[in-house]
Image 1 (cartoon, each protein chain N blue to C red):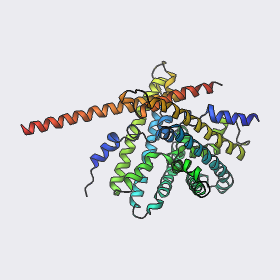
Image 2: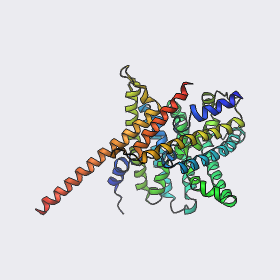
Image 3: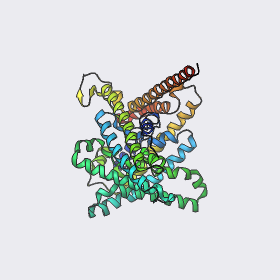
Image 4: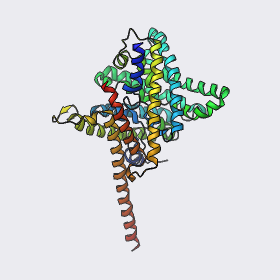
Length: 212
Length: 202
């Protein structure tokens, strides 16, 4: 059976983007987007856990009994989160500090459990790894974009480099997090709808041309 | 006494779990469409959070740390939370069917609620407790841990109940097409967060 990697990539980054379309894993999205760098750090940590938990769950999908699959998935995910945590603490202590409490909370990030349940437990190893990668890319992109916007508006900086002295405190507060997220979801829906309408029109036009 | 009052005000208002610390956002958005289910979810979370802190705090301080196994905390904690939830479900089913029918459907969701794991992680973190409650690592004990778990749950309940009240009103009003669903819920949460911001000025 041939795996459709193009579809997996499109699903993960655009048509079912975990952050902007499915609105999963909201806690780290809201809490860590005060700076773009935090967004990247969190995104990469989640991507790592997603890829490896997807691969292991996909390998073990026939061995895990259906009744205990959720606890089994959570244990596998918790193992990889522990690995990420120890590695970050040792190699990148700055990022470890800034992610803080939200690093252990990757265990209960609904994106990972959702992909384990709906994709990795039904598909082959290679497809599951690709799914983990692209879902992670979708999550990281969304977090980084939101982080960039909030950092520029909230503290007048980008990736920690000061741009100007003007800043709107609202965007670095918790209320600003909810507001930015709301605007991002609405804009993302608007853009993807416009794009799919365009491609529909194009297909319809092609059909008319073929018939003529 | 002053310290008790400090814990209550800090956990419920100043450092509210949902709108200030962003823990438990999924149920906050998912189960806040009507007042009754919001209250049910809130009470269930309070219950599980208190029990979790009651068990994870001594397990971490008296078993994991002396054995040098503190790096295993995530796996141990999630295992304890899943067991507590399972146990509450069985006990309720057996002894109180009315309570089970009110709380039952929310219980499985709580295992993956980051507020519960978040509370368990917070009470063992000396630095966090010092900055949130003003309790130093030496003063920290089980009583404070359980109290914090309980009142963090109360804070969660307060936020989710407020949200459900607002969303019941919004459901009957005319919302722009693009903002329907999640965006308008987020904007509502934005206003609740602004209201809670006032408490940080105390």
